[in-house]
Amino acid sequence: MPRIGDQAPDFEAMTTTGPMKFSEYIKDSWTILFSHPADFTPVCTTEMSGFALEQNFFDEKKTKLVGLSIDSIHSHIAWVNNVKKNTGVLFEFPIIADIDMKVSKKYGMLQPGESETAAVRAVFFIDPNGKIRLIMYYPLNVGRNMDEIKRSLVALQTADKYKVAMPLDWREGDKVIVPPPKTVAEMQERESSDLEMVDFYLAKKSI
View 1 (cartoon, rainbow, N blue to C red):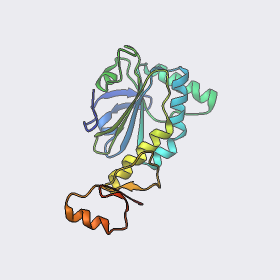
View 2: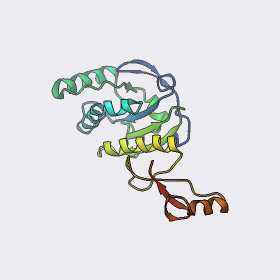
View 3: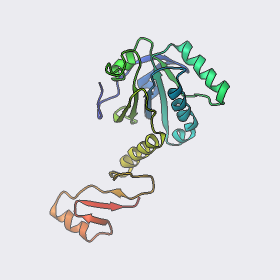
View 4: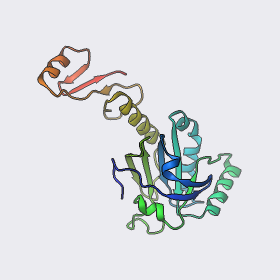
């Protein structure tokens, strides 16, 4: 099972947008890889529709979406068509057909205590260097929180850009935490700065 900080395992697979070599597809881009238990299921339909409805947001954040379930490409295509016909929502992002469970096993999406044949609701945030930066897991019967997925992506991108950290419940526009001082001189310099000082080791600023 890959961990935060690991390189995202590479693979080749068939998707609803054609063949994919994962490392080439995600190269130089942020990526969210997410699994769902099965096509034509109610919770999964709401989740995949949620990602599709936020496609513009992810495009603006230069982030690719890649879905997955342990179903055939034919099932995926039929499901995409069914949802489009009934709701008008089109899943434009690729959905991996992982019928042999190869990708699910590489990413620890199969968890026997939950199911041996259906992937749990895993979410992997992968940075432009192909490194896994954040992982979320949900059980089969609880849908994900799209606001948290979006918030987490923005937080990761902001942290990288400004070399800062995010406090509890941080949202875009809130103050961020600056790294703590590494020397006494830095501590003294901080005390006379315009940072919002909670204590010498906890200081915030706007960006």
